[in-house]
Length: 374
Image (cartoon, rainbow, N blue to C red; front, side, top):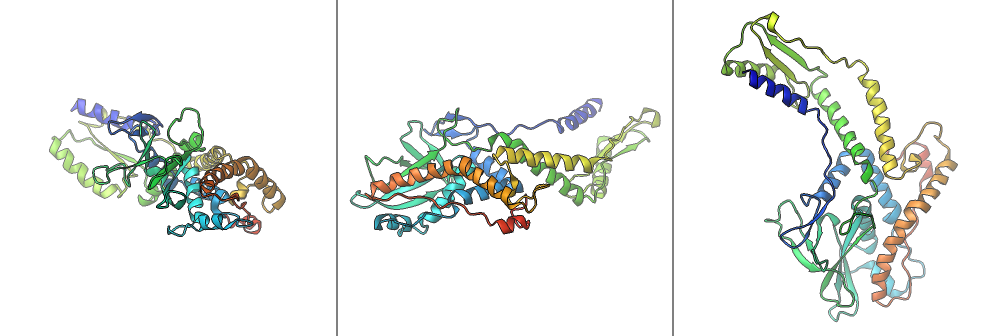
């Protein structure tokens, strides 16, 4: 019994230990492709971060809109380029595809498209969007493996296709583009990587508050029985009944059960004072917000719909910040994307150049506080 109590105390202490985020690694698998993360599911982790954090999700979407959300500039394009953008044999036009690839570029640091050639192999007949999280690269760097679910490759068997090579056009090839990042040879890594702990922390705090509400804000408690130590079965029956009465569905309000031979042998429990919890969470939320903004290279949150103290309604400041962010962050991203699609367009012998439209901020909505609301 004494050994069991020690194990229980040790378990409670371990609940407060820090958890580490999955690390980006590349390693060759037996199947011939390179693992994307230790368990080959690193992109799924990045998607979970996006779905867990309202701030992070809003910034990702706005960045994607800034890069490719306004589509291609159609002024002065020749017929070949217009046909290229229309992408008539696919359900998505190149305007739709460039927004999706811009989103993937921000989320994963990479994007992928399938190049489908004409029957005579003289031009690109169709471009198909492929989610970057479903792509794996072969160890020889000559093939791409595609699976709808890499966590269940028995059901979703990876399909092997050649990497894009215009010198040897075949029915279809896959083009995978990643941003350069030191230490990453095969797959993309996103810009926000240094702030993933802040992103994850935002979710943990929101979950904590939700559990507190679900449990009626009831604090954790200790129940001590001083009338002797019962048998194991009797203890389990008592605990089971009281847990049903005192613990909520999400188990946020935990109860500690102690059994002793009398008050003299009962352990002393010192409660943790939580009087300033609200103030702590307010300050922590500010730190989280700043950490996420910094990780996304955002100097003025107003351009993402966040009104900061002292700057509400100052349109000139927001517009200047947008111009700087456009110049330092968005333009290089657009140039990367434009270079990829223009290279494909040249294969079709077009004499014009594709240019992405610049993002225009609805300053009236932003200054009225109708933004993404981080």
